[in-house]
Image (cartoon, rainbow, N blue to C red; front, top):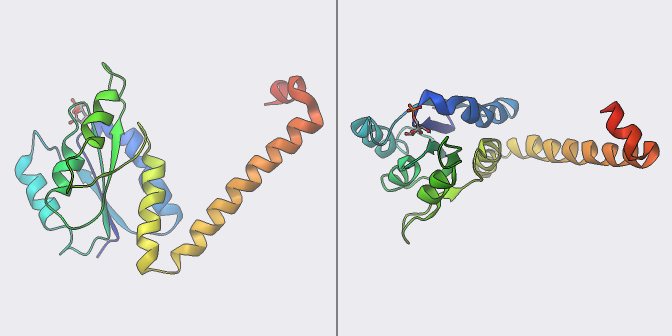
Length: 170
Ligand code: RP5
């Protein structure tokens, strides 16, 4: 049994959605990743979302663009938490995707990330998984400490070199 189910509306979403998978890989969290289109494969959506809890997942990450109904419809068919990733669309820059995912009716929540926010979706899923798998907390804690150190190192370099040298050497 895998920890997380990652679904996306199209393979064109993969360059963004892979960032969620990369975070889960980093934390050694298992997942299944596949394409499920709310509009083009509605039966597959029903099959996948309605069985997700019985299949042992802790949560679902769902990314979609445009009229992005995948996360909301998945959430309507499962007790599991669903994390929605609005994919940046070409015509409306992802605002269409964001609005489609975030404006859920009361009773069917989707935890909506930023446009193209798949990395945060992975981190959010890791925090959900960690509740039932305490060993994951150490990975999350290390990630946060490393991130803090990176910023502090940059701040020290900027203060030491001044902004012109800093930008030249970047
Ligand atoms: C959505 O339509 C997908 O999530 C994707 O973001 C968008 C475009 O899909 P393709 O035409 O690239 O397959 O369902």
